[in-house]
Length: 275
Image (cartoon, rainbow, N blue to C red):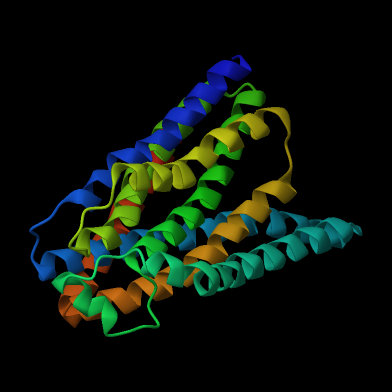
Protein backbone atom coordinates (compact mmCIF):
# COMPACT_ATOMS: atom_id res chain seq x y z
CA UNK A 1 0.00 0.00 0.00
CA UNK A 2 1.45 3.36 -1.05
CA UNK A 3 1.91 6.27 1.31
CA UNK A 4 -0.65 8.28 -0.68
CA UNK A 5 -3.30 5.58 -0.25
CA UNK A 6 -2.57 5.27 3.48
CA UNK A 7 -2.76 9.07 3.89
CA UNK A 8 -6.14 9.17 2.12
CA UNK A 9 -7.49 6.42 4.40
CA UNK A 10 -6.26 8.29 7.47
CA UNK A 11 -7.87 11.48 6.20
CA UNK A 12 -11.21 9.72 5.65
CA UNK A 13 -11.11 8.30 9.19
CA UNK A 14 -10.61 11.81 10.57
CA UNK A 15 -13.14 13.59 8.36
CA UNK A 16 -16.06 11.59 9.74
CA UNK A 17 -15.98 13.96 12.71
CA UNK A 18 -17.76 16.45 10.41
CA UNK A 19 -20.81 14.16 10.29
CA UNK A 20 -21.60 14.97 13.93
CA UNK A 21 -20.86 18.70 13.82
CA UNK A 22 -24.11 19.94 12.13
CA UNK A 23 -25.94 19.19 15.40
CA UNK A 24 -24.41 22.46 16.64
CA UNK A 25 -26.67 24.42 14.25
CA UNK A 26 -29.93 22.78 15.35
CA UNK A 27 -32.15 25.31 17.15
CA UNK A 28 -35.54 25.30 18.86
CA UNK A 29 -34.55 22.49 21.22
CA UNK A 30 -35.90 22.41 24.74
CA UNK A 31 -33.42 23.02 27.55
CA UNK A 32 -33.92 19.42 28.67
CA UNK A 33 -32.86 18.13 25.23
CA UNK A 34 -29.88 20.49 25.13
CA UNK A 35 -28.83 19.22 28.54
CA UNK A 36 -29.25 15.60 27.48
CA UNK A 37 -27.06 16.15 24.39
CA UNK A 38 -24.35 17.66 26.58
CA UNK A 39 -24.64 14.75 29.01
CA UNK A 40 -24.34 12.23 26.15
CA UNK A 41 -21.26 14.05 24.88
CA UNK A 42 -19.78 13.93 28.38
CA UNK A 43 -20.38 10.17 28.54
CA UNK A 44 -18.56 9.69 25.22
CA UNK A 45 -15.63 11.74 26.53
CA UNK A 46 -15.48 9.69 29.75
CA UNK A 47 -15.26 6.47 27.75
CA UNK A 48 -12.57 7.95 25.51
CA UNK A 49 -10.59 9.08 28.55
CA UNK A 50 -10.60 5.57 30.03
CA UNK A 51 -9.72 4.04 26.65
CA UNK A 52 -6.95 6.57 26.02
CA UNK A 53 -5.24 6.18 29.39
CA UNK A 54 -5.47 2.38 29.17
CA UNK A 55 -3.82 2.31 25.75
CA UNK A 56 -1.19 4.84 26.79
CA UNK A 57 -0.28 2.64 29.75
CA UNK A 58 0.23 -0.53 27.69
CA UNK A 59 3.74 0.35 26.42
CA UNK A 60 4.67 1.50 29.93
CA UNK A 61 3.58 -1.82 31.44
CA UNK A 62 5.40 -3.72 28.69
CA UNK A 63 8.58 -1.78 29.50
CA UNK A 64 8.09 -2.50 33.21
CA UNK A 65 8.32 -6.23 32.53
CA UNK A 66 11.78 -5.70 31.05
CA UNK A 67 13.05 -4.04 34.24
CA UNK A 68 13.58 -7.56 35.62
CA UNK A 69 16.04 -8.04 32.76
CA UNK A 70 17.96 -4.93 33.74
CA UNK A 71 16.41 -2.69 31.06
CA UNK A 72 15.33 0.25 33.22
CA UNK A 73 15.92 3.15 30.81
CA UNK A 74 12.96 2.33 28.56
CA UNK A 75 10.56 2.13 31.50
CA UNK A 76 11.83 5.38 33.00
CA UNK A 77 11.59 7.17 29.66
CA UNK A 78 8.06 6.00 28.86
CA UNK A 79 6.87 6.74 32.40
CA UNK A 80 8.29 10.26 32.16
CA UNK A 81 6.56 10.79 28.80
CA UNK A 82 3.27 9.45 30.22
CA UNK A 83 3.33 11.67 33.32
CA UNK A 84 4.67 14.70 31.45
CA UNK A 85 2.13 14.39 28.65
CA UNK A 86 -0.73 14.05 31.13
CA UNK A 87 0.43 17.13 33.04
CA UNK A 88 0.95 19.25 29.93
CA UNK A 89 -2.44 18.24 28.50
CA UNK A 90 -4.28 19.13 31.71
CA UNK A 91 -2.37 22.27 32.68
CA UNK A 92 -2.11 23.42 29.08
CA UNK A 93 -5.88 23.64 28.68
CA UNK A 94 -6.11 25.40 32.04
CA UNK A 95 -3.72 28.02 30.66
CA UNK A 96 -5.59 28.13 27.34
CA UNK A 97 -8.91 28.83 29.06
CA UNK A 98 -7.38 31.57 31.15
CA UNK A 99 -5.66 33.24 28.20
CA UNK A 100 -8.21 32.82 25.41
CA UNK A 101 -11.48 31.78 27.04
CA UNK A 102 -12.48 35.36 27.85
CA UNK A 103 -11.76 36.45 24.26
CA UNK A 104 -14.02 33.75 22.87
CA UNK A 105 -16.64 34.59 25.48
CA UNK A 106 -16.78 38.17 24.22
CA UNK A 107 -17.84 36.80 20.84
CA UNK A 108 -20.74 34.86 22.34
CA UNK A 109 -24.27 36.20 21.72
CA UNK A 110 -25.95 37.87 24.67
CA UNK A 111 -29.54 36.79 24.14
CA UNK A 112 -31.89 35.03 26.54
CA UNK A 113 -30.13 31.71 25.93
CA UNK A 114 -26.94 33.07 27.44
CA UNK A 115 -28.52 33.43 30.87
CA UNK A 116 -27.59 29.95 32.06
CA UNK A 117 -23.92 30.32 31.18
CA UNK A 118 -23.83 33.83 32.66
CA UNK A 119 -24.71 32.50 36.08
CA UNK A 120 -21.25 31.00 36.38
CA UNK A 121 -18.37 33.15 35.09
CA UNK A 122 -15.98 30.33 35.97
CA UNK A 123 -17.37 28.24 33.10
CA UNK A 124 -15.79 28.71 29.67
CA UNK A 125 -17.92 30.00 26.83
CA UNK A 126 -19.57 27.52 24.49
CA UNK A 127 -17.06 28.38 21.76
CA UNK A 128 -14.08 27.99 24.08
CA UNK A 129 -15.41 24.66 25.37
CA UNK A 130 -15.96 23.39 21.82
CA UNK A 131 -12.40 24.35 20.86
CA UNK A 132 -11.01 22.66 23.99
CA UNK A 133 -12.96 19.48 23.24
CA UNK A 134 -11.74 19.54 19.64
CA UNK A 135 -8.15 20.05 20.83
CA UNK A 136 -8.28 17.09 23.20
CA UNK A 137 -9.87 14.91 20.54
CA UNK A 138 -7.32 16.08 17.99
CA UNK A 139 -4.48 14.84 20.17
CA UNK A 140 -6.30 11.55 20.59
CA UNK A 141 -6.94 11.26 16.86
CA UNK A 142 -3.27 11.94 16.11
CA UNK A 143 -2.42 8.80 18.06
CA UNK A 144 -5.13 6.91 16.16
CA UNK A 145 -3.50 8.09 12.94
CA UNK A 146 -0.18 6.76 14.22
CA UNK A 147 -1.82 3.36 14.71
CA UNK A 148 -3.24 3.38 11.16
CA UNK A 149 0.09 4.36 9.63
CA UNK A 150 2.13 1.89 11.66
CA UNK A 151 -0.18 -1.03 10.85
CA UNK A 152 0.01 -0.17 7.13
CA UNK A 153 3.81 0.10 7.29
CA UNK A 154 3.92 -3.36 8.88
CA UNK A 155 1.92 -4.79 5.96
CA UNK A 156 -1.20 -5.58 8.02
CA UNK A 157 -3.55 -4.28 5.33
CA UNK A 158 -6.74 -5.97 6.60
CA UNK A 159 -6.15 -4.62 10.10
CA UNK A 160 -5.46 -1.18 8.65
CA UNK A 161 -8.89 -1.23 7.00
CA UNK A 162 -10.51 -2.27 10.27
CA UNK A 163 -8.81 0.59 12.10
CA UNK A 164 -10.00 3.12 9.51
CA UNK A 165 -13.62 1.90 9.81
CA UNK A 166 -13.53 1.72 13.59
CA UNK A 167 -11.87 5.09 14.12
CA UNK A 168 -14.25 6.61 11.57
CA UNK A 169 -17.23 5.43 13.63
CA UNK A 170 -15.63 6.79 16.80
CA UNK A 171 -15.07 10.16 15.19
CA UNK A 172 -18.76 10.57 14.37
CA UNK A 173 -19.56 10.42 18.09
CA UNK A 174 -16.63 12.76 18.76
CA UNK A 175 -18.20 15.28 16.37
CA UNK A 176 -21.33 15.19 18.52
CA UNK A 177 -19.13 15.87 21.54
CA UNK A 178 -17.74 19.03 19.95
CA UNK A 179 -21.17 20.18 18.76
CA UNK A 180 -23.15 19.62 21.97
CA UNK A 181 -22.04 22.79 23.88
CA UNK A 182 -22.80 24.93 20.82
CA UNK A 183 -26.30 23.51 20.39
CA UNK A 184 -27.39 25.25 23.59
CA UNK A 185 -26.66 28.76 22.27
CA UNK A 186 -29.25 31.09 20.72
CA UNK A 187 -27.14 32.00 17.69
CA UNK A 188 -26.01 29.27 15.31
CA UNK A 189 -22.24 28.85 15.03
CA UNK A 190 -20.97 29.64 11.55
CA UNK A 191 -19.98 26.89 9.15
CA UNK A 192 -16.50 28.41 9.16
CA UNK A 193 -16.19 27.94 12.92
CA UNK A 194 -17.49 24.36 12.68
CA UNK A 195 -15.05 23.71 9.85
CA UNK A 196 -12.19 24.97 12.01
CA UNK A 197 -13.32 22.84 14.96
CA UNK A 198 -13.55 19.81 12.66
CA UNK A 199 -10.04 20.36 11.34
CA UNK A 200 -8.66 20.73 14.88
CA UNK A 201 -10.38 17.53 15.98
CA UNK A 202 -10.16 15.37 12.87
CA UNK A 203 -7.21 16.74 10.88
CA UNK A 204 -4.54 15.24 13.18
CA UNK A 205 -5.70 11.75 12.14
CA UNK A 206 -4.29 12.46 8.68
CA UNK A 207 -1.04 13.89 10.09
CA UNK A 208 -0.61 10.95 12.46
CA UNK A 209 -1.19 8.47 9.64
CA UNK A 210 1.55 10.01 7.49
CA UNK A 211 3.99 10.13 10.42
CA UNK A 212 3.11 6.61 11.60
CA UNK A 213 3.71 5.18 8.12
CA UNK A 214 7.24 6.60 8.07
CA UNK A 215 8.23 6.58 11.73
CA UNK A 216 7.39 4.06 14.44
CA UNK A 217 7.92 5.17 18.05
CA UNK A 218 6.25 4.02 21.27
CA UNK A 219 7.32 7.33 22.83
CA UNK A 220 5.28 9.35 20.32
CA UNK A 221 2.32 7.00 20.78
CA UNK A 222 2.37 7.38 24.59
CA UNK A 223 3.01 11.12 24.42
CA UNK A 224 0.01 12.01 22.29
CA UNK A 225 -2.33 9.69 24.15
CA UNK A 226 -1.20 11.15 27.48
CA UNK A 227 -1.63 14.71 26.15
CA UNK A 228 -5.13 13.80 25.01
CA UNK A 229 -5.92 12.21 28.38
CA UNK A 230 -4.85 15.28 30.31
CA UNK A 231 -6.85 17.55 28.02
CA UNK A 232 -9.98 15.42 28.35
CA UNK A 233 -9.75 15.40 32.15
CA UNK A 234 -10.02 19.19 32.07
CA UNK A 235 -12.77 19.19 29.44
CA UNK A 236 -14.89 16.59 31.25
CA UNK A 237 -14.76 18.65 34.44
CA UNK A 238 -15.98 21.71 32.52
CA UNK A 239 -18.68 19.68 30.75
CA UNK A 240 -20.07 18.50 34.07
CA UNK A 241 -20.35 22.13 35.15
CA UNK A 242 -22.49 22.84 32.07
CA UNK A 243 -24.52 19.64 32.42
CA UNK A 244 -25.47 20.31 36.03
CA UNK A 245 -27.07 23.58 35.00
CA UNK A 246 -29.09 22.04 32.16
CA UNK A 247 -30.11 18.66 33.62
CA UNK A 248 -31.82 17.07 36.56
CA UNK A 249 -29.57 14.52 38.30
CA UNK A 250 -31.53 11.65 36.72
CA UNK A 251 -31.32 13.11 33.20
CA UNK A 252 -27.61 13.82 33.66
CA UNK A 253 -26.90 10.25 34.74
CA UNK A 254 -29.00 8.82 31.91
CA UNK A 255 -27.28 10.95 29.27
CA UNK A 256 -23.78 10.16 30.56
CA UNK A 257 -24.61 6.45 30.57
CA UNK A 258 -25.99 6.63 27.01
CA UNK A 259 -22.86 8.41 25.78
CA UNK A 260 -20.54 5.99 27.56
CA UNK A 261 -22.36 3.00 26.07
CA UNK A 262 -22.21 4.57 22.58
CA UNK A 263 -18.44 4.79 22.86
CA UNK A 264 -18.21 1.33 24.37
CA UNK A 265 -20.32 -0.18 21.57
CA UNK A 266 -18.20 1.29 18.77
CA UNK A 267 -15.07 0.07 20.56
CA UNK A 268 -16.52 -3.44 20.83
CA UNK A 269 -17.34 -3.35 17.13
CA UNK A 270 -13.77 -2.36 16.32
CA UNK A 271 -12.43 -5.18 18.50
CA UNK A 272 -14.80 -7.70 16.93
CA UNK A 273 -13.91 -6.71 13.36
CA UNK A 274 -10.22 -6.83 14.25
CA UNK A 275 -10.60 -10.39 15.60
